[in-house]
Image 1 (cartoon, helix red, strand yellow):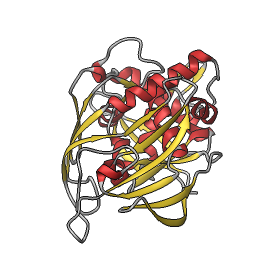
Image 2: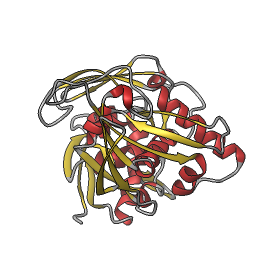
Image 3: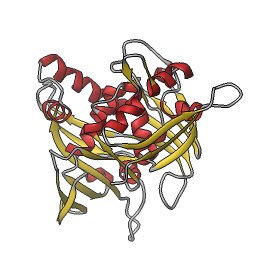
Image 4: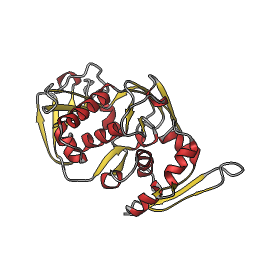
Length: 299
């Protein structure tokens, strides 16, 4: 995420904070609330439907649930979202929803004078910049894949019911990642505007390291996102699976973490990357449930 360097007042009632985007940073702020919600199927590209792709699929959390509406999402889409969270926020805008660069019809909250006001993060980027940041190809096909991913993300609506939406209040309602507009040319520039809800969620964030993430399988990426929101944990493997890969069978999920002959498990890969200090799975899955105990490397 960017650092605040100055505050400007522009456009009448809209206050703008100018931010500096670090295009080289491999550490990205990601809403901690979303690290425990399996919005993204642990597959590379969505070739076949899974339970996660169903319209209105509901994901339960310890503090409520999230119901996703829109296209099915996968790890490719999550990578795209992570890149946009790093590359887009050039400005923090605060003011009437109707006066924003991309006007909002739903105005949330009021300022001290009783005027409708929202806070959003805004900026521009291109599919090429996203692909450069993620190490994707610059071919026309891959740039179009990224534009398609951006479209899927923008069409996603989350119905959230939780008591941990922010530090001070519970929440029930619809939220989305961002709105965008710009050139229809897949190589063209796009204006993005992260929603007021995402701004709220980002107040409590996990740091995702892309250098670790790029070495992981789709299942490894899903587990890495969850672990990035916790320093250490001891959790039933079935509970972890339900939060990161609900459509996978438990044996498949366990094999992905522990590995098999000739292939390292994802836990071992995360230890080799310097992300995990320790990670073990105990139990037999019958008389004793599988328990994953792990601890991240302290930075």
